[in-house]
Image (tube, rainbow, N blue to C red; front, side, top):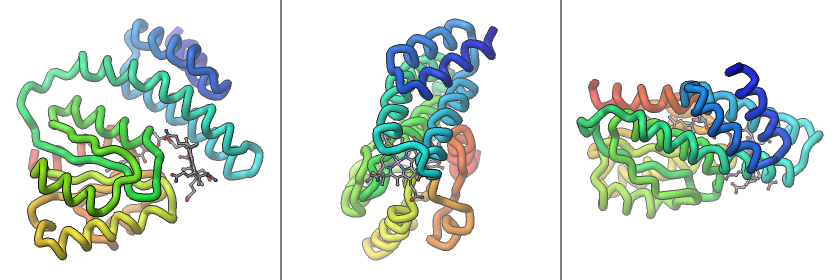
Length: 214
Ligand code: B12
């Protein structure tokens, strides 16, 4: 039964059908499935579309169609994650954004949602965020953690630029930095001097707690 619901949700994303995707996401929640499992199914589907694009079997409108279906279903899962959120203690504050030149929002939003579920106060400063805007976010919100997402090999180096700018402005030691996104590896994260990297959203939430010493 739950397998059928998840398969239908996956199919709705592969069919680029936002209405069906939100309908099956609601059914998955009603069936009592864990938000992490639902998000993992959706992620698999959109990555399958990405692979098709990579091989030249699918094209940009396919990415847009899959992303639209994904974006229709995501708020339903987010709502459930927030409803389930039991942490009343404030674990810490996070500023999160997708780096300059990069408009991929889905993974960053998932990480923000699961951080909230872990009790963090999250300031999501959006996509295509310049180094100056990240610095402004750090000055304004004084976060414990700065989280940056980058989905493309072209935009990943932007994370290095932000870290260098934080150093130049004397802000680097005021904040822990975690990085992620499809284009990254642990080696890259180490090479730019980030404090942590994880390839998944649930892992990002655990990593954030670890960076807070919890
Ligand atoms: C959907 C999509 C789009 C949508 C985005 C819509 C939206 N609202 O986000 C649209 C159609 C707009 C798009 C556009 C483009 N895209 Co695109 N896109 C994708 C696709 C298919 C899925 C991305 C996604 O949402 N994945 C699902 C999420 C959940 O995964 P995720 O983002 O990786 O996040 C997870 C982890 O990485 C982690 N995570 C994420 N952020 C963070 C942050 C921290 C701190 C941590 C710890 C963890 C973490 O947690 C998440 C959950 O597990 C990928 C393929 C892929 N395999 O990812 C291509 C992909 C990223 N796109 C690609 C390209 C090339 C483009 C375009 C240049 C295409 C074009 N020719 O115009 C443009 C670029 C636009 C721009 N300037 O940014 C390439 C990038 C190649 C590369 N390595 O550089 C990919 C890999 C496709 C491919 N195989 O070639 N895209």
